[in-house]
Image (cartoon, rainbow, N blue to C red; front, side, top):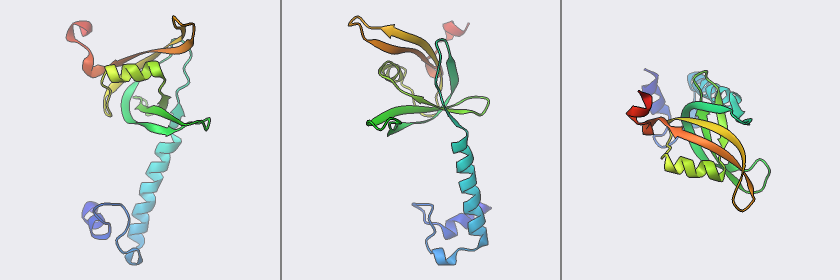
Length: 144
């Protein structure tokens, strides 16, 4: 029902009104409701800051690159929605990035990530170590 009304007032290629001067209270109410939903999703975000052994399981709802929190470039991230409704941002380090690629993680995939702790490389550098599983790659014999 409301989808048809939206098409009348909104352009096909954006959510902006084609003729803002024609906006009525329904348009304003609709836009306010949409913004409220978006804000609630934003407020529900948490940063995953794991301790050794912590794990997160859920559906990848977004993958991307954002400005670093420390102002020194950009940072790759995943947004994971857990079953309890919480949405976590997981910042991707090199080990995790490699596993995301190996497991072919995409938006809408179910994943589990476990933080294994800090590990020393053969060169003596310390790095954060993770284990990531993509549900679409689990073999039947593992489940049985």
